[in-house]
Image (cartoon, rainbow, N blue to C red; front, side, top):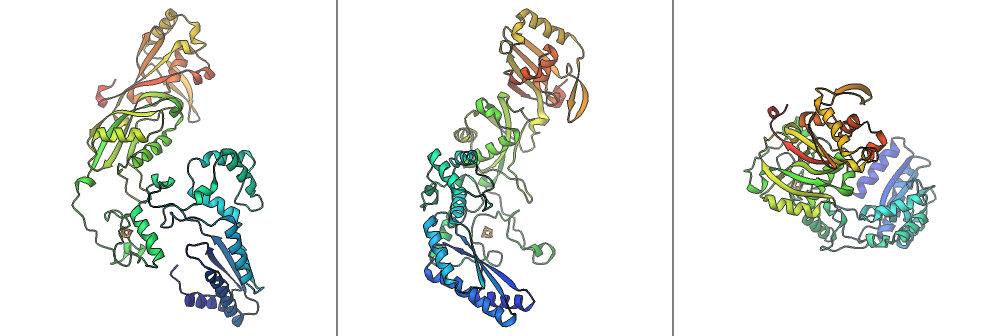
Length: 472
Ligand code: SF4
C-alpha cells in the first residue's frame, strides 16, 4: 500500500490522540516469499500500535484481522499456487502465538473458507455442476460462518469428480488459464513481467505520475491515465491524436447465422454475451462504445422469442483490424456454442441502417401434423381456414400487452401464407413483425389453446431486409 511503518505508527498515534479507543489493522498472510519473520513483523507492528495508544489513553484496543492470499485472475500473481489448508492454519496459529498481548484481538478467516474462495476465483466451467451439487446437498449463505459447511462442498467435489486442489496449483507461462477468455484490458505479457518484477523487488511506478508502463489498457484517445481533478484544472493532459493504422480501422460486418437445438433457449441478452465471448476467443478485436461503461458494438435485429429456432438470424458487429470475412466466419464458428452457426456474411458501411430499421419481411413455418389439435383437420380443411383468413381485409384480435388490453389487426401484419401439404409458411411484414408473436397468428386462425401453442414446433425460416419504402 506504499505506506511506511513510520507513517502507520504516526497515523495510529493521531487516531488515539483524537479520542478513538480502538484500531483495526488488516493484514494478508500467504503471499509469496513470506517467512516466519514476516508473521513476527505483524505481531511486532500490532504491539507498537498498542504501545503508542497506551501512552495516550488508558485502554487502547487493537485488532489484527488476517486474511489469506488468493492468487486472483488478471493479476501478476495469477500463476502462483495458494497455500493449502494445513499451512494456512499453521501460519494463523503461529501468528496467534506471536501476539502475546492479551489486549490485542486476533481475527482470521477459516482456512476452508479461503480455500473455497480460491477455487471459485480460479476455477473453470466444471465448477458449475459442483455448485449445483453443493446447493442440492443444502449449502446456503456460505458467506455466513455459522452456516458455512465445508463438508458439503467436499462431498460435492467428490460426487462431481472435480479435484479442488487442481485449481490452487501453480501455473506456468504456457498454461491455459480459464479466465483468459475475459479481456480485462491488461496485457498478459505485462502481468508476466510484473510477476518477475515482484520477485526481484522492482517497483513499477504509478503511470499517472510518470511514464507509461505499457500495460495495454490505454488507447490514449478515450482511455488515458487521469486524476479526477484533471477535469477542472489546467493539469488535464493534452490528448495526442495519432494517425489511425490499418489495424485500428473499424469495419462493420453483417453476419447471418442459425440458432437451433438447445441454443434456442438463449435469450436475446445472452446472445449478445455469446457473440462477444466468441469474438474475443477468436482473437478478433471488437469495437467498444465510448463512455464509462463501454459496450461491444454488437447489434441484433428484433428479439427472437426464447424457445423458437431460427434458420436465419442477423447480427451486426464492429471490429478492428484487417480480418477477412471468411476468416471471421471461420474463426467465429470454432468458438460459438453448439446450435449457433454463422453461414454467411457481408461487409457493410458504418452508416448502414440497423437490422431492425431495415427489416422487410420475416417468415415462419410449422408442420400442422406436429399439433394434436391441428392434425385433426384434413389438409383441405387447413387450406380452407387459411384461405378464409387471407380473404379478409382485417382480422382483429384483443390481447394483453404490457399489462394492458389492446386491439390489433393481425391481417395487416401477415403478408402471405403458403400451404404445402403438411407445412404452413407465413410471412409477416417486417415493420410490424416485432409487434406480433408467430403463435398469435396461428391461434387467431385455428383457435388453438395456449398450452398447445407453447409446444407447437414453429421455426423462423427467413429474415429479409429492404428499404422501408419497399414495405406495405
Ligand atoms: S498509461 Fe495506460 S497503458 Fe500506460 S501503464 Fe498506465 S494504464 Fe497502462
